[in-house]
Image (tube, rainbow, N blue to C red; front, side, top):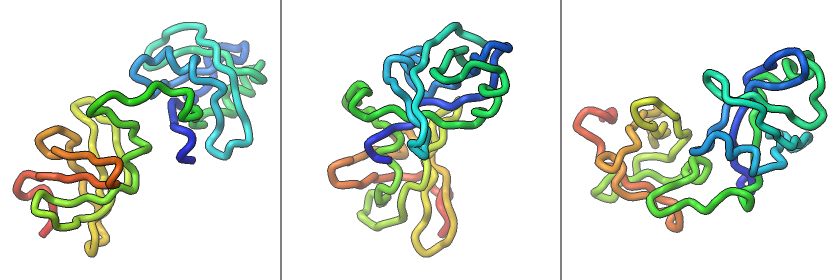
Length: 169
């Protein structure tokens, strides 16, 4: 799904008239409605989104084709994807997390360490989950300028400078 980016998820029903609780992954949470239509991961359904309010831990929204609480509840956990062309371009030193998955990871000395398996959002700072070559293990690295000085999307490469003891020997 490289032509689509995950921009949110449905957390369940909100009220009894088919509204959903929507968790937006966008820098401006309400902008999610402007990137529509939004697609399911399987690409078998699409929804126009209309934000109805800001609620604790998200938004309330109407989705096309969802008219009852039961229909809204059935969508709980569903991730929503926007066409990449509908999203604003990333600015310098900004990246869509989806673009980082699968990139090679090397240390500052040029030794290959593994590949990025996932990017995890964390209140303190985001984390890169790196699948380590030859270990069958993963490592979590803070996605900070100090630990990740270089991200080169064109070369499909991330250079890391991890603190002592952060990676297994």
